[in-house]
Length: 248
Image (cartoon, rainbow, N blue to C red):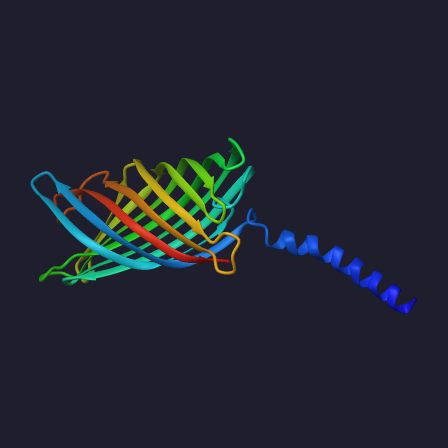
């Protein structure tokens, strides 16, 4: 009789625990991703009399949290932070960016989903050119709004996501600083900048899921005026990058 009661208690506990464990391991729950980021940027500086182009490889880290890669329908969201650094032939680039996305996903069928996203963010970028005469920093600070459309396809153990949209710079500014000489600040004109990202979440229900992404970003900095020490008043950055990280 005691053995029968004990078996009944154990069976009841297992039955109550299994749904909880299954829910915790659900592949549709929000996830946290952290990993390495590498990119290659083409920086073009334009002025009334001259044009200068620089090619800069960069490396850094990214982390994000949300359900853009996992949710099937309903509310989707993600916050992402990234930072990069590059040094080449006495030139340096430092870059940091934060994005916050919020949207709604609809199911086309059991494996295909589309979503519409709105968001906001902030980008900080500093370019330190090679100069024999001055120690120069060109720093840009640009808040932005964004709109995007996304598509998810779920395979048996992986998920593919394609996202494309526009970032709209709003009330940005640039600072040109010649250390020990002077510093100038100018507003950046509002501009629309396209982006696209292709991501794959591997081993979605396994013990060590991985995420890999290819992306393209364009950032255009068109000054409201001109710095006194240079005729360059436009900067365009085309960034081609890859991300590889672990998912928790």
